[in-house]
View 1 (cartoon, helix red, strand yellow):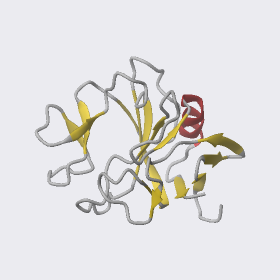
View 2 (tube, helix red, strand yellow):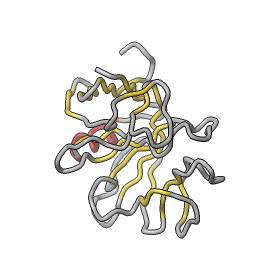
View 3 (cartoon, rainbow, N blue to C red):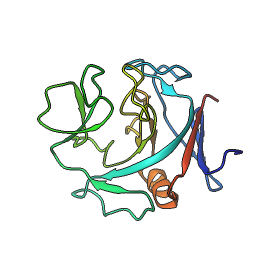
Length: 170
């Protein structure tokens, strides 16, 4: 890895972090240089890890240098390009389309937000691109990166402020 502060690299279905290699899942339609809302692609690029979100009713508070937030039943992430809070954390109820962060499954028990389409947020350029727990059958995501809970916890605990992730097709 050549970029400063890139400590996790994803190439296709493999993740690399601090000498460890592990499987990952990515968007159903592969990787894209030009992410569009709803395209089910994972964006290509180098992004800063932002905030760790976790379900305190399911897991212990993770140890990390990143900011962390407990997920509550009233939290969501706006994925509606026509909403004023597009690609941001929102409180529910919320009148625009959004993704629930408090889920029945375990995909969002632990997740990391990245700075894809955040500075500035551009309408239709993609939202809710997270690093989260992979589905039990290791199926593709809607554009996020999925990995095992243990590998994600390793990444969370190893991350430093301003750590970056590099996302690329294989």
